[in-house]
Image 1 (cartoon, each protein chain N blue to C red):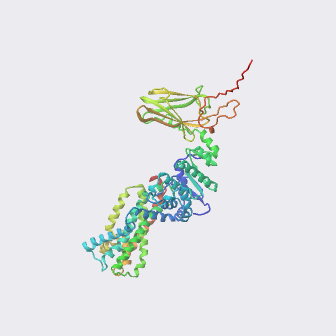
Image 2: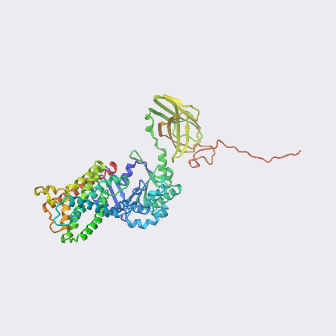
Image 3: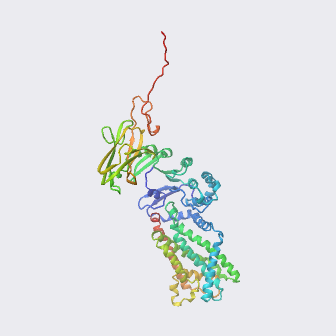
Length: 348
Length: 276
């Protein structure tokens, strides 16, 4: 797992040269920075397999040997002699990935290309990457998808602002990533182009102490502080909460919570009462937006501004405390148990 | 494409040796890129590859009419179409190479910024495409020679040497212009002008013997003068004379162009992906 900007990947895949430092590579490197690079729309599927293979560094003999396998993997047998400009985007991507997946480099660099295709094809791709890794070759997988990293990787490194901050097992790496302050702290205090700034955002417990580790089923609130350089009327604030794999879990909206569009001037504090936290233990992030009624403009977008990790609450004598793998959210508010006893009619 | 893992060290100011080895490893890419360009060119055309023959033929007809019939230039006893065609072959090769290779990096920008391969492959394979056109046009020349019952002398066997010089000139200029084009798109407009202008200052429609003797050496600084004169000398035989001092000067100039071209290209190659 790596958080790197594209520049480092470009260096590793030799697209650009380093200005200082040294990279040691043992074996052929192939990168899937973008699948389908070098496809020509006018050429047929068959022709593109050869062309793309050659561009990625395969020899003609190698491509011929794997040709049938590639075609079968991409499931495009019937359209081999059709120009790829007539392919559906799904077919196009499948073919492109198939060529890249069958190149047998010693080191394969994969950069979140799995976001393509349908779920079935994605699983096929994950399987292929596992095969590659099990065949004794190296896969360098770059992703923010913690679930995929847990599933695919043995070891992980994490980079932050160009420095190595973690190196170890994938499992520990995922934890480190979630715990580290990967939030976009710069967003706090930054003035948007409409003169609005989010000056503070914090999750607070019952005693109004800010925390990054709220405890499941305890009462919390979210406090936001906004500043406007010039007054703005009819404002509404929306908070979006995402889990660690980027699923939108919930949204908070001032209007829905009963605050009619308000006027923003100078410093304003907004407090959402979250009640008892019903999100299951796990890592979440928040993004904060400011809109005005009947106006499509986003006046403020502070993305990933706050990250928090819900901690399991210790329930007395519990056998099954709610954990992150139990889902995202608690639906039950409580539970009741009643015994129905057979009614005994006594005759006296 | 070795079967055993090979250790590779990438450092700033990478060793040149690695580069030339890579160029050899990627030798099939020259072929595939050229193959692509030729395939793509005749897709969705109704007469297909026939265009490759038709284009140079039409140009030859135009030249014959304009210079042979209207301008009435001296022909030294050789059929005028052959005189023109012997010069037009290398000129067309050079002109096509120049326009194709100078654009080769920009038109393949998506490859350049996504995949690694030695960048020299791109302009070179553009020259190879033009060379294939050149070979096809060569068939027309053979046809013309048969038509006029023209028998070349022993000198025809020296032709590959002149082809090599033409190759050197096309590649040298191609490397320079393609690398410059990445950074300064002005060259997109400069290149067509060079080609248009070059046609008039190269001895295509006329023989270089009409240039006054005292200016002949200066004229030979145009690298195509040596090549075209060489082609005429080799193909036409007989009266065609080769002006040796000028020709040697041309060769020196072409070598210089090629060497500096490769150097310049290599020096700026590392920044292509960032600048393009």
